[in-house]
Image 1 (tube, each protein chain N blue to C red):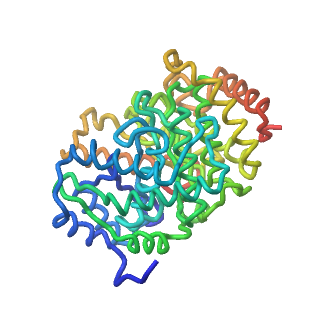
Image 2: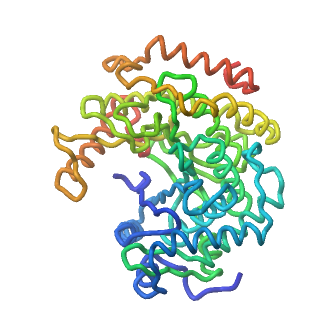
Image 3: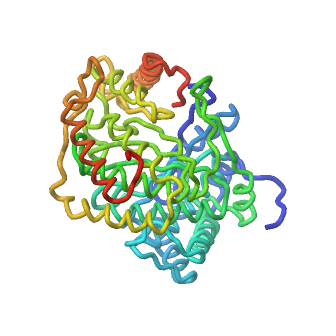
Length: 203
Length: 239
């Protein structure tokens, strides 16, 4: 890995999305992605046993990672609005990995959790984020549903569901009702956390 | 939202993005938010088979930190036929990609849960357990779920599934990986032949008293059935 002038920012990414190589989306989906993935599978001789869900072979683990780095560098990322490819150099990718956060705080006060790296064999359990994970909730039970997660001691944080209606209206995307629904979800999840005595829970 | 909440933005399948997401990402970057970037690679989709999807999953995970300067990545390999994250192939992709990233970086990552069976069924809890074991023993930092019954039906999920996800994770953390893989293979075999007849389960208000927020006796009984199966498979959390 060599030094680069500056790490990639999301603003650089936007500029590259406006100036990168042009390509039809179908060529990306049905050409670039399957072709490069297959090529890298063969290059690194990656073979997974479906009876072994988590790899135990260090060579397989490391070659899979190298193939993933190669995949990102060789392909880049396709922007569906500009029909252009956003390209990164290998050193930009490796620098971003080096700069990735090593920890963060999820939630506040007594409910704050410091999320830290945990190795595969760590006795430290992962953070448990309980909730409907974006599934549709009725207005009638939205608050109760989320309070039932917040009252579970093993749930460290909440991942919310989405309101199927707000004031009986369909929160159609790109409409004012969508804004009302999102705002209502946030207020009700906070209320659910407070009712469970865990106002500081992360969301 | 608070700065300590995770602010979400999603990539698209596979290795794609839209300008709207970059605008959201630009706001998050400038306002110093905790940024969670989500993506669910599809096994059997554009990438192809097991190995190809795992390669794309690693690339997608890394892209979170290049493109969006993310705080953490939320994964979710999903099976193209069943639309779930708990199928054997989806678990294998998650387990391999998660372990590869864990071994080679300090990146923080999570995984999200979509089961085929619905709440108040043993199958739903066993699917949840299989993914919880996979994620915990491959080095994930966050488990996020559960969207039961594929997460598409109104009120078809409860906190009992999240409790099971958590208890299994606490039970398996630190176990020997080879023993974990043996347990996982047996566990997945218990439900993977039942996809076409998976029980729909019951909605929230039939699983809980919606006023007292206490789960029904029926669901507690189902939960205890699942505990017995997991204990017999070698998980000691409830002993």
